Structure formats: structure tokens, C-alpha cells
Amino acid sequence: MALNGIDAVVFGVADMAEAKRFLDDWGVSQISAAPDKLVYQTRDGGEVIVRPHDAPDLPPPIENGNTVREVIWGAANQPELDKTLQSLRTVESFRTGPDGLARATDPNGLSLAFRVSKRAPIVVKPTPTNAPGTHQRVNQRAPVRTQAHPINIGHVVVFADDLAKMRAFYLEKLGFVLSDEYPGFGVFTRCQKVGGHHNLFMMSRPGKPGINHVAFTVQDIHEVIGGGIAMSKKGWKTEIGPGRHPISGAYFWYFENPLAPPLEYYADEDFCTEEWQPTTYERKPELFAEWAIDGGIDGTTRRQLAPRDRSLRGHA
Ligand SMILES: [Fe+2]
Image (tube, rainbow, N blue to C red; front, top):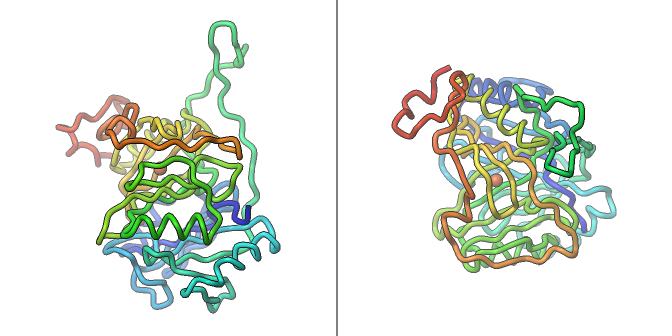
């Protein structure tokens, strides 16, 4: 498989200072901060790049407001990158940018760039669990985490103007693999056969392409919860979460933010190999969330902010 993950996401934003404040709280590491360019990294070296929305060298937006302007996909090495580029060369929008990176525009209008990955995958050990007869955590206290440190940028979810065209582009031109599907509505895909359940989920929304969210992997549910509570404590508003997706199995927490549509912490998604059997699902609300907290958890009281208390969600 030619591509091995998301190497960077480029955001175009209206307020660089607010974006910086959010990323400092989100737990990614600042690499550089210029007035017209912020660069932060996840633990594996994946990059969050933020530019003013009107920077002349940014690819055009696919929707109004703060949003993703480009996704940079990585390949393990040059031969693997070349394999992807070979099939992409037949795409009309294929080009080489001024920075030397190969680029193409997907059928949704989103700019994609490709490079030999700068990430160095890291191995983490989630908190071991105990159950009667199976004790993985012995003479060891379970942690309470107080801050997330995202490991990588795991997936992007988009609203597809033409889902069939998007499905064909990613599966046939970029070598993505189908993980699960809502026929005619949503397609979960991963960029390599052996990997996390999805790197790209596409949902049909004819006439209105856009970004649904961008997701950052953390090591376990305790980091989803601890990281989310830290964000709440700093005044950032929950979009929805914490909760758990039945499809992919992941625990999630989504936050409103000044970079784009929601950003997500998630952990414990299904891991797939060639043996994974894609399933088709009929759309039902319980397939988005096995359970979820609407409005988040207050960082101080550690209790749910009920929907009626949403005015309180922004308090620090
Ligand atoms: Fe997600």
C-alpha cells in the first residue's frame, strides 16, 4: 500500500491568535509561530499548519469560514510515494507545487499534497484493564490524566458533494481500502490495508462540500476524558462528547475551535488487516454514537453540562 497516513493538515483561519491559543491548549507541540504561519506537531511528527485564510498561496477553500485548505498524505519511502503518483498522474488536476510536492485536487475540490512521510510512528502503552480472571493491571494504580498529547492526526471526515466520485477517486486512484459503508451515504476508508479503521470518512451532502471534522489520536479512553476535561476547564466548548462510536469502536470527544469544524480526540479504534470484512450499515442514530454526552463535562464540577446549561459551557 502506497500511502501510510496523514502527514499534515493545513488550515486557513480568520484569527491566528485564537488558533494559537487553541493549539497550545490542545496538547500539540509548537514548532514555529510567525504572524502568517503556525506549525505544531503531534507526538509522531504529524504537522498542524495554520495560515491566515486570505494567504495568497493557500489552495482555495471548499466552504466558507475557518476550514481545512489542504491535506498532506505521507508515504513510507520514495518508491511507495512513486506508486501513488503513478496512478495519480492520470488525474487532470495532477501537478507539482512550487514547494516541489506532487498535488492533486479531489472531486470535492480539496487540495491534496503527497510527500515521503516525516512522521516517526511511536508505540504507546494504554492503561491495562482488569476483569475477573484477567488482571492486566496488578499492584499498579490506574492513572487519571490531566492533559492530552495527541499522537497523530488519524482521520479527516468530509461532506462529499458527489459521494460516488469521491469513493472512486480515493479507492481507485489513491489505493484506499474500504472499511465499512452506509451505501449511498457514507464511506469509511483507510489509506493502507493494515491500519486503523478509517483515515477518511466521506458523507454525502450534494451541493455543499465541506469538512465535518479532523481527528487526533490519543492513547486511551483516560486521555480522551482527561484531555477533554482540560479543554473544558480552559473554556473551550464541546461539540459533542465524550462518547463512543459503535462503528470503529473509538471513544471520542469533539470540540468547537477557531481552526475548522470540530476537532476530535479519539482512542481505541478498530485495527484492520487484509482479513477485515467491510460491513454495510443502514443509517441509524445509534450507529453514530453507542452513547454520548451532549454538551460535554464541566471542567470544575466534573459533571455533565446539560443541554439547558449550554451557556455555561464556555466558562473557564
Ligand atoms: Fe472522527
